[in-house]
Amino acid sequence: IALRQERIVPHLDNCRSMSAFAIGAQAVRASWGLGGGILTLLVNFGETAVTDTRPEGAEIFALGDADQRADGLRLGARSFRAFLSHSA
Image (cartoon, rainbow, N blue to C red; front, side):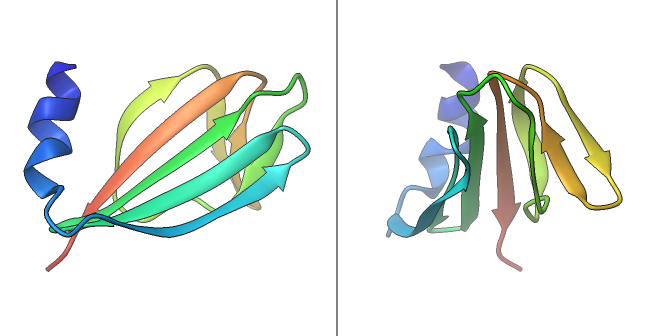
């Protein structure tokens, strides 16, 4: 909760959904434009790893296994990543 208060809540002005799409049979990527940047979440609910491009910005929260590879960010089974980029 403290992380959300510190890193996300200050940027909720003009929050808008930007995109959401499947990156695997049981995985999704969703992004929101915030007043000061973009919040992107990648979640894999499945038992099989999935690979997607790494979002711009800093990784602000991680749960489960993931690693950067030449072909993109690999999310292990039941994993989650949150990234926050700030506008210049």
